[in-house]
Image (cartoon, rainbow, N blue to C red; front, top):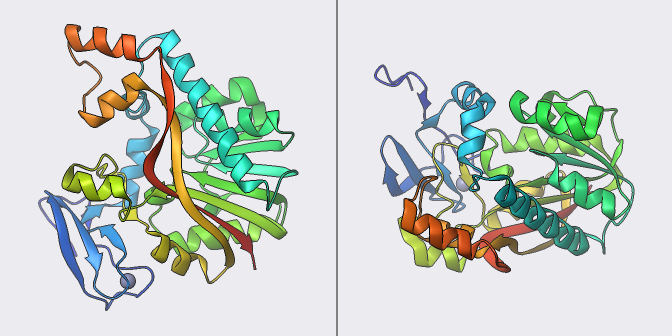
Length: 294
Ligand SMILES: [Zn+2]
């Protein structure tokens, strides 16, 4: 559908049920709507920004900095420590199915997963579509981090034991193509782990339209345990779907609960700086799906 007022908007359809399945609107975030497929229950954004327009957005340094809640170096280090701890925990959850070998993180950002996986003995690699963040990550990781999308990546076929996509799958416009590309890069018996916001989680239900994971226009799909099992089923055997969480500073959690921006004002900044001295693990309303290549 062409919208002359907003040429960067498009309507979307359910990738499980196809273009003829109907959908009902759950929440309006003009000009975007979160809709639910009437047939399978998948929640997705329609209309949404075109993929071309959103990839431009991701290239932008300002986009990355607006997604890092810390200002100073100390806070940045705390955030990075929390992400490394979070990824070590997720790797331990994956360990019963894959605990060594060559690992790839899709949407690797500054390389926190690489740090975590290397500590556990993996041969680590990362891929990210942002030239800004890849340039930063390459200062530490060299050519272990590459710029690009998995759908067009030039890794050798069947070369990875483990591929992870943490907080990435909700951004993917063509999930079947994405999963098929991963399937091709995994060795026989290779494992895929995805962490993504779950619209059927308790956090989502109690938050309603204020759920922190309704992050627009970037989050285009909202996968539940049921719908992620269905989209994975073509190429993968689903081993486990479990609740996910993350380590975060209390300041970060406080900001999320109150949806505060990067400049919360002097009094609140004082409170947040104090709360940032403490960090805890909490359920974050996401799910982790672990699956083996068929
Ligand atoms: Zn559907």
